[in-house]
Length: 307
Image (cartoon, rainbow, N blue to C red; front, top):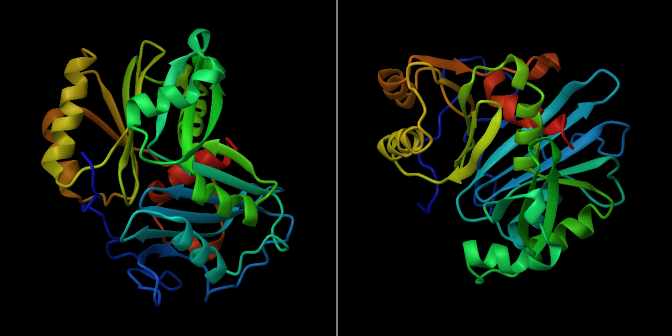
């Protein structure tokens, strides 16, 4: 289902000292989900720290990590009121004071919907474009790339709109790149020995959810889902449990990302699933961002361990 997810969850009643919630930036169609940045250009992006930039269809996230202590120093996520395009991306980066001359140690996480996961033994780079266009159509001019997911003997082929890619090349000419799928798969592969036999992981972003299913240590499914109502989401997840013959009594559902702990979707999930866990990765963060719930940040920290 196309369209922007409308079930964005707020920060609730947590303290907000330096957080800026639902602040519309002048002339830019986005809303701040959370931010620890002060003003438009408060961070020295040329330092030894690692800068991460994540792009989704309807969101942008930037976050800074000190690699010496693996500490999250600053972060911001914005929800876009329209689909990401090159002009919007360029304007946002300029507003944040980011320029090619300032940036070092840059890591791009492309959370795009145009992708295909295929077995390694069937992968042929010359067929990448045909594969993506067969699945997603040929209306967009895409720059194609691929990430090898060696643990599961698979390759994730994905596309980024060429105009957006041009902006990325200009601002971050030497950046490391990964698709978000590769980060999620690498993370799940590192946990297999400690996880139950059947799991669903659901990562909530301001624009969609990412759903990952593992059964008996085998990756079964990974997909993005854009939805409009809680009923849409619940129907989608229940359909997946039937399709993959998952036992709802023993299935463990992990949730993280932009979802409140008192959200309606959690109430509905508990009607159908016995085991639901809010995933909170253990990581170090600066004191001034400790008001942001840990599960909000978990998907970003998963990416930081991958790129």
